[in-house]
Image (cartoon, rainbow, N blue to C red; front, side, top):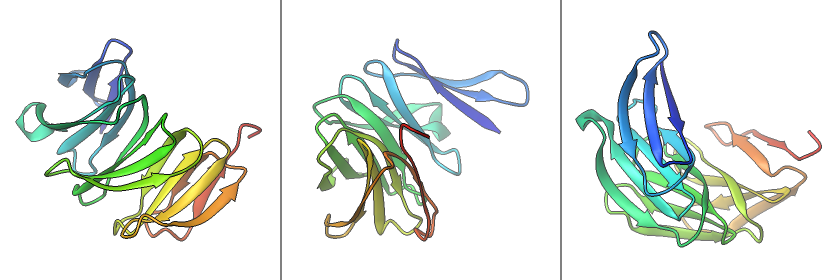
Length: 171
């Protein structure tokens, strides 16, 4: 099992939970706010306080694959299950969907509040963004808001997008 950590000095590190040894270390462009590890451990996405989002290739000891700029603090990152897309949530009240290979911005979804949680379902058709005290559910293809649920800004969606777990500040 692998554990990923990030710190305010811009360091991200993969650890083996079996022996506690550090496996790969990468230097991010600013304080690390969010990390997402590919399910096959082949890639890591890091989001930084200075707006930089970096995709790291873990098969080649942490070589940088690409970097995109969100223009403001990135609170959340999420790598898709098939490693083709990643989502970001930022201080500009947007949940963005990016192409892993090219770094192209595929969709920009307006949430109305700072986005601190993002999640993609298994077939990349649904994006859930936790913004303020709301969960915003978007259609990935169109970028359209499908549903907004009040009372849950901390979100996690099942891979089939059939269930959403949302928690507000009251618990």
